[in-house]
Picture (tube, rainbow, N blue to C red):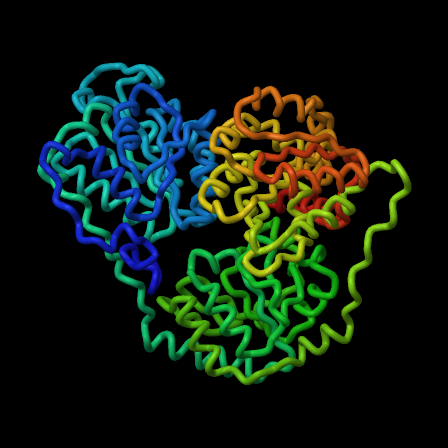
Amino acid sequence: MEAGNEIGSSAHPTSLHPPVRGHASTGTLGRHLARRLVEIGVKDVFSVPGDFNLTLLDHLIAEPELNLVGCCNELNAGYAADGYARAKGVGACVVTFTVGGLSVLNAIAGAYSENLPVICIVGGPNSNDYGTNRILHHTIGLPDFSQELRCFQTITCAQAVVNNLDDAHELLDTAISTALKESKPVYISIGCNLPGIPHPTFARDPVPFFLAPKVSNQLGLEAAVEATANFLNKAVKPVLVGGPKLRVANAKDAFVELADACGYPIAVMPSGKGLVPEHHPHFIGTYWGAVSTSFCGEIVESADAYVFIGPIFNDYSSVGYSLLIKKEKAIIVQPNRVTIGNGPSFGWVFMADFLSALAKKLKKNTTAVENYRRIFVPPGMPLKHGNDEPLRVNVLFKHIQDMLSKDSAVIAETGDSWFNCQKLHLPENCGYEFQMQYGSIGWSVGATLGYAQAAKDKRVIACIGDGSFQVTAQDISTMIRCGQKSIIFLINNGGYTIEVEIHDGPYNVIKNWNYTAFVDAIHNGEGRCWTAKVRTEDELIDAIAAATGEKKDSLCFIEVFAHKDDTSKELLEWGSRVSSANSRPPNPQ
C-alpha cells in the first residue's frame, strides 16, 4: 500500500470506530473473516457453493455488511472478483476444494497479471483428514491434499492453509494484508469444520490493519530526480507516456502533477488506457507503435527523450516487437525503480514520490505539443450510410462514443473491441477496463458483473465479441439477479475475429447463436432485462435511445450484426505483425 492509502484511513469508514469487543461465543473464524473483508472494503463476495465451503458461506451471509453473490461457475466468480477489484481496490471470491479451486485458477492468474488484490478463499477438507491416508471426493484420488495449493503458488503472492484454529488468526491476517501490500491475489484454504468453532483469538472484532506506507530511499530519490531532470532539461522535444502500472503504484495524481508542470505531450500505452486523463489539454492519444492514434506515434517515436511511466512491453503492446523506441532515449519509471537510458538505475524509488519530485525540477517545454498541433488533422467521420445499409462497426463505435460520460465505464473484451474501444475518447472520470496482459477471452462477462456491482454510480457499457461471449455467457443470469443496469453490445461477426487476423483457419468459425433469445431465456420473466437485435444504423439509434431512456433501469443486451471482415484497420495491421512475431523460425543452433 502506498502512502496515503492505508487500510484504516478515512477511505474505510468501518475502521473509524474503535473495535467492539465480542463475546467468546461469537468469536469464530467465520465471523472474523467476514468482518475483515468488510473492513478492507469488500462489500460483495462472489461465490459458488460446494460442500466444503457451505458452513463458511453461512458465516459470510450472517455479516450484515456483506453481500454474497452466487455465480454460475467459478471462472466467472473469479473474473467478477477481478472486475470488482478494479473498481474498489480489492475483491474476493469463495469456491470449494479442488473442483472449484482449479476452475477459478485461470481468473486468479489474470488478476495476478494485472496486479489486482483478489482474496481467493477455498473451503478445504476437514482438519482431521490432513496427515491421514484417506482419499477424499473432489480430489484426483490420491491421499495428498496439496495439489490445489501447489497450483496456486505460482499465481498468488501468499498462500494460507488453515487447518488449525490456534494459528488461523495469524494466517488469515498475514495473507489478506500481503494481498493489499503487494497488490496481487492470495489463496486461503479453510478447513470445512473450522468456521463456526469459537476461539479466543477471535474474541473481538478485527483491529483495522495499519499497513506502513512505503517510503522511498531519500538519497536514491534525489539522485534519480537530479539525473532525470538533467537528461530531460537538455532534450528538445520530450514526451510522457503512461502505462498500466500507474494503477498499482497509486500514481495517477502524481502523473497529472508532472504533466501539468512540464508541458510535454502525454500519450498512453494501450494497456494504460483509463489511467491517464484524456481531457488533459496535452493528451495526444494512444502510443501503440504502428497502430497508434494518428499523429501520436509519430510524435513519440520522433522525440529525443521519452519518459515511460509504468510500462509493460510485451509482444502485444509492442506490436510484435516492432516499436521504434531507442533505449538510450528512454527513461523507464517502474513502481519502485527508475532507469535512465543506457545509464544509471535507481532502486527503492517509488513512482508517486519520484513523479511529484521531478515535477518541481523540470523546465517547461511545450515544443512537442506545438509540433503535434501543427501536424494534427482531426479524424474523419464514417461515411454516411444508405437506407437499410448493413451497420458498420465504425458507425457503431461513433454512437458508443456519444454515450460516454463521467457516469459511465467501458469494459472492452479481448478481440477487435480492444482496438475499437481504444479509439474512444474518454470524458473526465469515465471508467475504462480491459485485460491486455493476460488476454483471456470471456473475461469481460464476469468483469462486467463485478465492476457493476462495485461501481453502482456508473453505468457499464460492455463491448463483447460473439466468440468471447460463448465462453462465459451464463453469468448474464447473475447480472439480472443483482438488478444491474449495464448495457452490453454483443458484436456478432461469426467467430474469433482477432485470431482470424493473426492466423486463419476453420477453428475460428463458431456456431451462431440466437443471442437475444438466449438472454431472454435466462431472463425468464424474473428481474429487469431488455434485448434488441440491430442490423442498421437506424435500428442502433432506436436501441440506444431505448437503453438510455425507458429501459435505463434494466440490463440492456443489444446484439449487433457485423460482417465477419468488418474490422478496425488497426487490428489488420497489428494481426499481421503479431503473426510475423509468432512465426519466427528457430534460431540456428
